[in-house]
Image 1 (cartoon, rainbow over the protein chains, first blue to last red):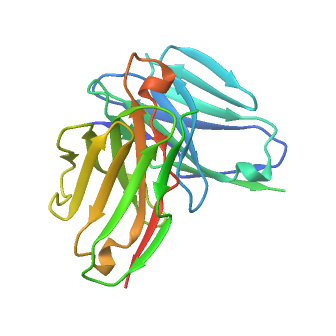
Image 2: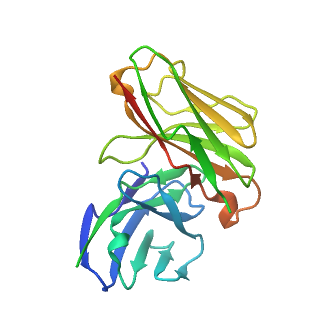
Length: 109
Length: 120
């Protein structure tokens, strides 16, 4: 079966760095996405990785290792507004998105 | 770029009535649109996938006669919840994906702001 694993919840301190991991087992691979979802709102697109390596976008970076079926989202200089759920999703060989359950990130002052 | 709108943002209706939700891609052509449902503190659940001009593909367990989807143009898809009941109360979110090559914007799903449905 297809499976996406990510931690249920993480806590970090304002100004610090946090890494949210995602491991996957899917039928084929056509890219991995990270989305941010604030409570009560729809998800917003953060990043897309299809090749191995690190993609940096401001305070957020996303890393992919296809051979290991592994990705992480790195958030630097954490701000209170970064408190949200972070969803990992993988596009399989049929171009269908397989969603992880999301990681709730709690930022403390 | 890649803005998706959804209307209405919030709706309250009586049990047994039908509710229509519109999803529009404002600045790109969406060859594929997706409808999700999300209950409080739960994951996104894909309900159906629709391609412009063809019938929607429903996920297992989703009643196609209850959740009518129309994707008549490259910028508009509608979801109609027919004979709504209290258990249909949920957060309904659409997303849109443009066609083309395997570029970021082409394969990325962009989400509308969601519609919160409350059935009394």
